[in-house]
Image (cartoon, rainbow, N blue to C red):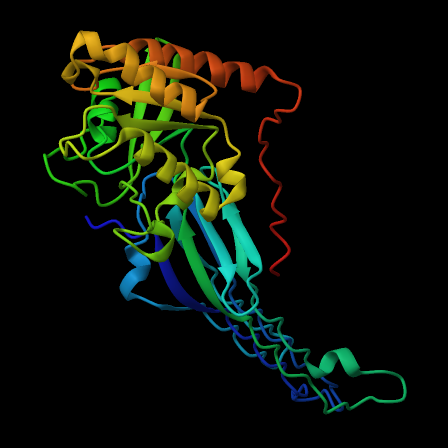
Amino acid sequence: MKFFDEARIEVLAGDGGNGAASFRREKYIPLGGPDGGDGGRGGSIWAVADCNLNTLIDYRYTRTFRAQKGEKGHGSDRYGKGGDDMELRMPVGTVISDRNTGEIIADLDREGKRMLVAKGGRGGLGNLHFKSSTNRAPRQCTPGEPGEQRELQLELKVLADVGLLGLPNAGKSTFIRAVSSARPKVADYPFTTLHPNLGVVRVDENRSFVIADIPGLIEGAAEGAGLGHRFLKHLQRTGLLLHLVDIAPFDPEADPLHDAQAIVEELRRYDPALYAKPRWLLINKIDLVAEDERAARIGRLVDHCQPERYFVISAISGEGCREVCYAIMEHLEAHRRSPAYVEPTPEPVDATENR
């Protein structure tokens, strides 16, 4: 299945049904009076987070979603039937915004979250509501209200605790294969990763975290070079970034220090909040460097980058990967224990708000 993380759709909630202007007509009952019923409400459109989905491909080709209209009112005090609501199931992590105003309507950040994106119109009033002692035969009724119509922008931001970033062929996919059961494509050419991959890293029986691998960045990504920076949004929900640097690049003229600094600069230009996240340096492919050169190369990188923490690993052999996973788990657990951390709680949904 193709991975789509953006889509544009139009949602049209159902119009409310018109109220009826009717009078009771029965034998032996003269002047029966008004008995026109109300129209039914229009159906609303709801967005629901579904953990069984991981792409917005369902909204790539079907662009318009229309809820059912309310039925008009009838005589004999009969109210019209309300239109059925429509549910749009989307991957967990989808952000829904109004294309015209830019307003964020919903953030489906947990399984089962249900948010109203277009409210159905209320039904019109029948003429039985307008009777009074001075107006015994009212002929007025009201039309149903139109349902909301919106153009929506859907943007999927994957939910992960840890995000990987680095140049193409830095070893990000190899690392996620080494520490989790995820099996992204690995090859000896750039841009083998074309969409984000998620993996669950199990440190102990009841201790685990989710790690995200995105396509590699290159210098100039902010101007659209390579795959650009469109996948960096998938790291915005993470609590920790792992910056992988290839210490033994295939090109002898490549400088690992320059490459590392270029990635940090692209991160800063894309989003200052993402740049400010905790970021650890993973010096990868140490097995390809002669032992007498390792200390000098590692020291040069660490002295200039000054990371919060750094680790020396070989993703393909697994050297150092276990220590990284335990350190990440301890960091995440310490963050969750801190007073500033707030455990997300389900938001109550008023089931009557669309009636």
